[in-house]
Each structure stands twice: as C-alpha cells, then as structure tokens.
Amino acid sequence: VDDAERGDTVGGVRIKNFINAGIFPAIIKGVAIKDLKKTTSFLNQCNVRLIDKDTVEWFIYLLDPCFNVKKPVVIKCTKTGTSNACTHLDKKHCITSSKTMATNKKLAHIKTQLNLSDPAFKRDPKGWFEVQLGAWSAEHSISYNAFTTCRWQLIGRQLPVGEGGMKSINIRKLHFNIGYNLAVRRFAPTTDERQAEQLSTILHEWSSGVLEEFGIKVMLDVLTSTSDSGSDVKRTLDILIDAWWEWCISHQIHLAFTEAFGTSIDPNNNKNMDMRCFFQKIKKVMEAMNKSEYLQGAFEEAMLELLETYLKLLNSPHHRWSSTVLVLERILVAWEPLLQAYRKLNQPVPLVDMDRTLCIEFYSLIEP
Image (cartoon, rainbow, N blue to C red):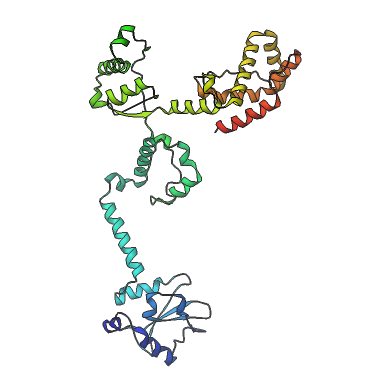
C-alpha cells in the first residue's frame, strides 16, 4: 500500500483492472498473460507481462505517466532477458531492482579498489599479475609445472586482465635467482678447537669472516639461509647468525629417497629391503663388468647388435639421490643386452624377471 501511494509501484489493483478490461495492444499476436508464480521479479509490481505466440515477452507499463488504459506504453523484450524493461524503469521512473543495485554496489567497490591499487597495476594489469605470481611462487616453492595444468588454465582464464585472462604464463622468465659461491672450506677443526668451543661457534666465526671480506654484514644484509638439519650447522644459521633458516630442499629429497629406496648407509636403518637388494645386485653387476674384460666386451657387442649404440652402465652412489632415476633408466634400456652378454659367456645371470618388474615399478614412481 505504501509503495502504491508513493507511485513506486502500482500494486495489484491497477494490474487487475487492466487485465479485466481485456484491451491488449493489437501489435501483440496470440497474447497470453505470463504465469507469475514462477518468478518474484520486481517487474511484476509495475507491469502486465504478456507472452505472444512466438514466446516473446512484452511489458505493458502501468506506472504514471506511462499509464493509459487505451494506449499503454509497450516494450518488447528479448527471449533471454528483460534488460529493455529494466532500462525503461530506471530512466523513466527511477526504479531499480535490488539485484541491479547489488551489482552496481559491487562495481563501485571494485572501482574504489582499483583507484587505491598499485600504479603498476593500472598501467599493465597482466604484467602486474605475472610479477606478483612469480614472487608468490618463489616464496612458497611452487613448481613451474603448476602453471601448465588444466586447473591453472581454468583459474587463469577468469582473471580480469584482458582476453583469455592468464591461462598461460611462463613463470621461469619471472624468476631471477642468481647465486655466487663466495668460499669453500673443508671443515676439519683441530682437537684444541673442538675442546675449546662448540663447533657451531667455529662455523659462525669462519662464515662471518668470509662475508665481511665481501662487505656483507650479517645483521644487516643476511635475510635467510638454508642447510641440512645437522645440529651444529643449524645452530650456526638459525641462532648465531639469527636469520630466517629453511630446510634445504635437496637434503629433504635425499632423505625421502633414502628412506623410500632403502639406500641408507647403515643397513639397520633400511626401510625397503626389496629395493636395497635390487641395488646390491646392480652393484655386483657393475663390479663384474669392471673386473672382467670378456664380460664388458660381450656387453658392448650386445649393445651394438640390439640397440646400435653403446651405453655405459651407471652406478648409484648413496650420497647422490638424483642419480637413482638415471641408474634405473639405464638398466631398463640395457636389460636385454646385459642378459645376452651373460648368456654368451655361459655365466649365471644375476638379474631375473622379478627384478625387471621391480625396476619398472620404482622407475615409474620417481621418473615424474
């Protein structure tokens, strides 16, 4: 009732009277009144909504000054939207739907945020996103490949920075990590040094001295450091130097591989006996190759015959986890030539089909 008195809406009375009069514009063919039970639009309070024989929607405005029983204002809408009707209400009657008001409020908020944003973002939004994503990925050790996945393409495509968004981005070009090796020293403190001070103190004095030679002040210039979790080294970097210390990724991966593949130096710490036995067999094959010129010659001949090239077998030192995948890969490539070499010399073959199956399984796990 209050809305009707203010003239904002016409309420049900005027709509009912217009419908009862039955005077519909001749321009609309095959007219039918739209079922309003399925919609709660504010347009229902301002118009009579009609559907013609082609299912096109028409609006007959019943608001002053557009109201006229004999010759009403009629607006045709599209099959997919009512923007024409909403535009008329907004411009002629200053009536806006709550949905449109919420959208306008959101746009105004975004505009305010843009006005307060970095000038670099205003100049080049896509470039700004690339730099910030590059910094973020470096801070959190995000893989380069993360930005080539289908999930990232789905996310990047939605970023409002131009056509296509940022579905493709080369993070490698945004990382500028340059390292310099300042000094190398074999750490072998004397007995007197060991007895006089903690090893971490000796490390601290030596590393601080090297940095000072290059004009680097620990308290002012050193932001972060990385190492393994050795107690002396960690205390030096984390407590004495008092910088942000992080685990060395290479050492973490090394420990993970050592545990997964049972290649710990101490056999008592082994957690994968099958893989440890397999690597021991590979080690015996390598030793046999190095000791026997006949076996080495037969292997080389078999390689050339079957693969038309010679590939040397690789060893897998315990302290070099990165070589594990290369060792397994080379064994798989050289499997048949290796067996042929042993059979040619009538020697017992140290590797069996089960070993090859095991090798394939572990290689498939670590190769990616």
